[in-house]
Each structure stands twice: as C-alpha cells, then as structure tokens.
Image (cartoon, rainbow, N blue to C red; front, side, top):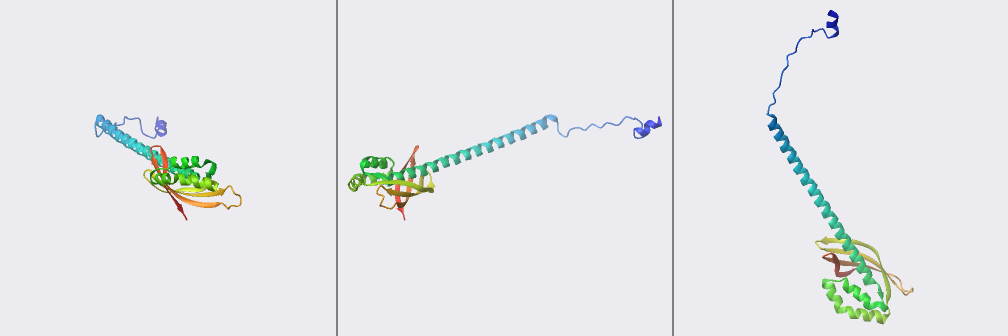
Amino acid sequence: MPEDDAVSGGEPDTPVDVVYLRPAQPPAQVERIALVIGLVAGVVLAALVGWLGFRTHEAQKGETQRTLFVQTAQDVAVTLSTADYEHAAADAQRIADAATGGFADIFARHRQAYIDTATRTRTRSLGTVTDAGLESQKGDQGRVLVAVTVKSADPAQQPQFLRMRLTVQKTGDVAKVSDVAFVS
C-alpha cells in the first residue's frame, strides 16, 4: 500500500495525541461576568435612550412655546393696527383680552379714549403682518419683533409701515402681551 501513503500525505494512520485545554476560569464565573457586562450595557443603553427622549421632549416644548410667542405677538399686532370706528368697543375688548401686566393696566386707563378717538375720527384701517421673529426668550416670557403694514380705508392715504417689539408672557396654556413698544 505504498500508493495509499503517497495519496494520503505519506504518513500512515496513527493515533494523534489529543490535548484537552481547561478553561482558565470555571464556567459559572464566566457566565456571571457576561451577565454583569450585559446588565451594565443595558443600563447604559436605557439611560442614553431616556436622556435622548428627554432632550427631544424639551426641544419640542421649546419650539411650541416659541411658536406660541410669535403667533400671539402677530395676532396682537394686527389687533392693535386694525381699527373700525363702527366696532371700536369690540376692538378695544379684543385688545384688553390679549393684554396682561403693565400693558393691561395702561390700556385699561386709555380704553375709553381709544374708543372715543376711533369714533370721532371715523378711523378704518387694516393691519397685516409683514414679518415677525422671536428676538429673545427667557422662561415663560419672550420678546417678538413684528413688522406691520397698515392700510387705511381712504385710498388717498399711503400705507404705514410699523415695527413693534411685543413682550409676550405665558400663563398656563395662554400667552398674552405684557408690553408693546414701537421701534423706529
């Protein structure tokens, strides 16, 4: 059978010595280490997911609040720049409803003068927001810049272009204007 030796690699079939390696640590200890590593990885992953979820919630809450501030300022700017002498009392009520703090106090003192002036001068104007943006935000208060175009019902009068800085205060789910300043 020399041909078989050449085909099989030249060595006769002889038993090979088998070496058994013992694990360095007992199997139970390896399982405990793997379990601890898995638990630590799970806790770290859960903490990371929780933190990212919290940050996403806070970002959405902040965006919702910024949108509320800008929308409230736009609405009040239109209310302030739109007047109709036939509905002066209703216009004044809308302004009062949207006001809080110092602005509410000032408007309450001048409310009747607003109504009387609009009625006496037969004022009719329509304000439209040209642009608006959040200038700053601190807690539940934001300052918004609003550009408004005011067109008179009288076609002979040129439109007026106003810029206002409105301070918006959030109380509960509602936002109201606490200060209005005209910017040149």
